[in-house]
Image 1: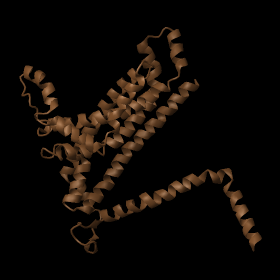
Image 2 (image 1 turned 60 degrees about the vertical axis):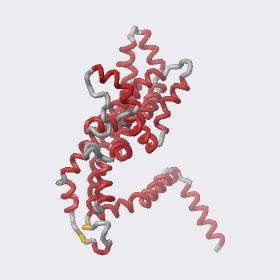
Image 3 (image 1 turned 90 degrees about the vertical axis):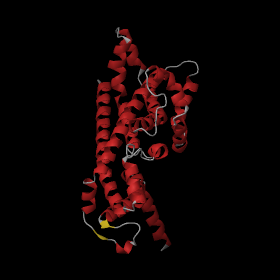
Amino acid sequence: MAQATIKERKSLSAWLAQEKVFRLIPFIMVEATFLLLLAIPFILTIYISLLKWRANRPFEQAYFHGLLNYVRVLTTEDFWWALGRTFYFAGTAVMLELLFGFLLAMLAYKQFRGRRIYITIFLVPMMVVPVVGGYNFSMIYIDSGPLNQILSPITEAMGVNPRIRWLSHPIAAQWAIILADVWQWTSLTFLIFLSGFAALPQQLTNAARVLGASRWQIFWKVHFPLLKPAIMIAVIIRSMEALKLFDLSVLLTFGGPGTSTETIAFFLWRQVWQFNKYSFGAAASILLLFMFGTLIFYGIYLLVRERDIVEEERME
């Protein structure tokens, strides 16, 4: 009996040691973790989205509601306004972060005295806790705060009220949130672009210089095509995070004035935690998952395509 057990263990070890089996072990572990941590809550969310239930009532009183929650979400005007504001915030902030991050990376990727110090300073905002950053900007944006004091000579010369109401005017409040997000997350795009510049093959640059190419031609014809995968990575990562914007909307304006800074995440938080509409929130979450997931997967498709194009150009 003992010998049979030993033989079984040896055969199991030999089977697991096979290359085709060994490669599947991490995949199986990841899938098991996914089922435990993600699949069960996801299925539960879908189940709640099909019920008629508010958190101020016992769950036993919930009853099947079908797809009516999804219909209510899609026919709620505030949902679409919040979604539109979220895309506006995310699109504007991500574009500015890409621009500033790219320019800073262009300045810092070459070797010069004090380079490490500058890079460390550029990366500090990304390390700040969002709550701390939001509190600091709330102090900067108050009517008598330092930002208005700095801008007062310019605004007075233009005949504009020197006390700009950054947190109580609808348009100014929107830009206050965008600028705070740009300040904190430009560091991430800078780091991604800096890695991209560091990976550029020097021999291609040297060959272009030998052929008489100008700096602009070297950048546009040599560097920029090779940086496209890094640009796509920065766009995807920052878009994923920007579409979940919540902290700054709560800390700076609490969605106001009115609903001018209410993002989709803040809208769902209100529906669930203030109005106890758990089924409504679950249905909206599922719809947003498919909307945002489609955009992210399309971005990943573009990233893979750009990477393949770059690899083909290198092979040529």
